[in-house]
Every structure is written in C-alpha cells, then in structure tokens.
Length: 257
Image (tube, rainbow, N blue to C red):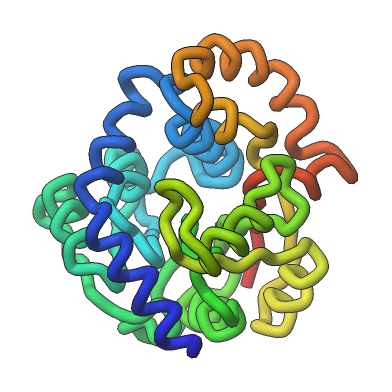
C-alpha cells in the first residue's frame, strides 16, 4: 500500500508539473495573487532564516525537488546544488530552471548518494505524500554530513484550514474538482520522535502560515490578494507562536546531524 500511495503521488505531480512551474513563477510577479504563492512566500522567508546567506563551498540537496524552484533560488546564492525527484516530468522542469545541473530520478526513501554527502538538505512538501516518513527521514540523516542541517516541511493534523478532514473525504469520494489523492499529516510530537530516531538532533518545529484562505479563494478568488496582504501582519506574529503554531497550515522542521 505504501508503494502504491507514493506512485499515485508521483503520477499526479507528473500531470501537474507545468502547472507547478507556472505557479512558482507567479511568486515573483505577485506573492499575494493566490494561496499557493502566498504559502511559498512565507516558506521562503522561513527557509532563509535557517539557510546561510552565502553558499560558497556548501553542498545542498533538494529531496523531492519538483520543478527546481528552491534550488534555483539557492544556486543563485552560490550553493552547489543537487536534486532528486520521482517524477520525470517534474525533473524536466527542474532541468529547464537549472541548466547544467545534474538531477536524479529516484525514490525519496532510497537516495542515490553516498553517506555524509551534503551540508544542507531541503525537503519541501514531500512528507504529506508518505504513509511512513521514517525511511525518508533516515535517508536524509544518512546523506547529511556531521553537523549538517535538514529543513523539511510537513502538514500538521490540526491546521486551521481543516484540510486533513477535507482530504480524507476527497480521497474516499469525489468532492468537486479536488484531487483524489490521500495525504498524511504529522504532529509535532511524531516529528520530534521520528527525527530523533533517525539520529538527528536539535529538532525544531516551526509554523509557516495559517488561516482558512483556501476555501475563501474557492468562493471568491478576487478577494484573496487584499485579504492576504492584510492577514500577513497577523500571520507573522501567530503562525510560529507557542501553541498557535500547532494550528498552522504548514510545519517547517529544522534538524541537525
């Protein structure tokens, strides 16, 4: 069942590769245009909190690199980048965005790299498609150098937009135009124990953004840009606050080897 779930996720993302590439381009045009680009704007700001400002001499692997958007951001800052993804269509977009860079197609549970190969590892929006996050976490720990940093996003089970419930329903029966793909949600406690069991330490759980905006966007997309601009002031204060961060729509896990 686990392998089937991962294959379904890869197939869906292969179908949506061009869509994701367009969405990421919109971040530079208007980061408040829709909920997707707003979420990535907020994530970029969180990632930059924990990434070195300059990447010269540092190796960076993106596990589940998708269209290569994050790698392009950090390649431009001097990091030596590598990417792996299960979807050939996503990798096609990643190569367009990052010419001359080697990308590998692989299962994220079996990374095609030697032990202690990378200073930093990103893993963005992969864990939500893994029925068991243990194998991928252990692989991330394996290929990290001693002292290296992993930055991994996950989907909280208590998120404010109630998406876990909606996903459970849409995976069981067709609900409008929602994609029928089961996703998986991890609490802060589960994440801490999983990362610690994989040999990672100093595990921090951060909230990235919150709010029920995806459903308002479905009702009236035109309202979203001004609402998100106004909301961000409060989001900046509450999304990663103690207790409140457990209701964020995305977690960012920082851990060290």
